[in-house]
Image 1 (cartoon, helix red, strand yellow):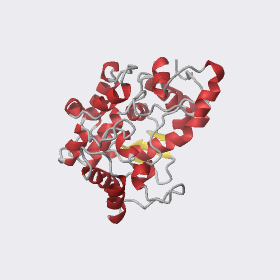
Image 2 (cartoon, rainbow, N blue to C red):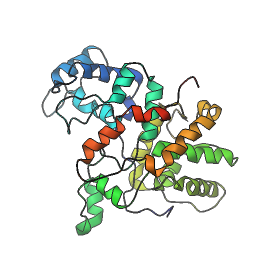
Image 3 (cartoon, rainbow, N blue to C red):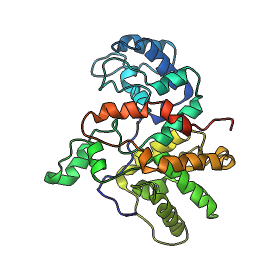
Length: 303
């Protein structure tokens, strides 16, 4: 029960390349993928395209002295469900939602907003266990993946939806609808169920009025900062220039009924992907990369 945490090291791991995410990089990576669509990944061909078109720097790897921008940044696409992870499939496979974007059914802002709202924990992409997390358990650790660990503790959260609902609750309560990085690290990340947003917002309000102060979760800060960078790319949030605060965007206030409806639908436990041990990684990309069943959650730029 909020604010208690189920295990040490609780966080929201996300791509560490959040800082480079912008429409030019996104489009460049997807267009590079078209060079090998349906075939085995040709890293040399893709790297050449990315570097020659000035989309990404060469990123020459010290171990091989080879250009490898693709290896470093392709995880951005798999993170957002646009390609199947190259660890899962050697054939470069774009998902239906990637094709919808390439066919101009979605703008960049609409796509990022949709996929960040739908992004959940647990998921089948962020499955790797960190050594520090395993060590904190000692000999009692018996989970095969990070996905299994989170499922075991019944974690079921969509961070972007949670952040929006917390900020909206603060706004409704007459509080400043802003979250600091410290509040993200000490309060928001403690949510393990979508219903926790209410208790989280109440705890933040209490802390702002000389009430109890919750301790920041030390391992969560980097991930919270990355989440804030990513959320700044959506229609729903504004992030300060120094990256230390996040607030509702004018779009969120103007279109709050539509946004609240989508967030309510995405808070329903039945809308979540469910972990099942067999073939769970493939199953995740089938779910997260689907377009037809995501249309109802799309927020259009010109509402």
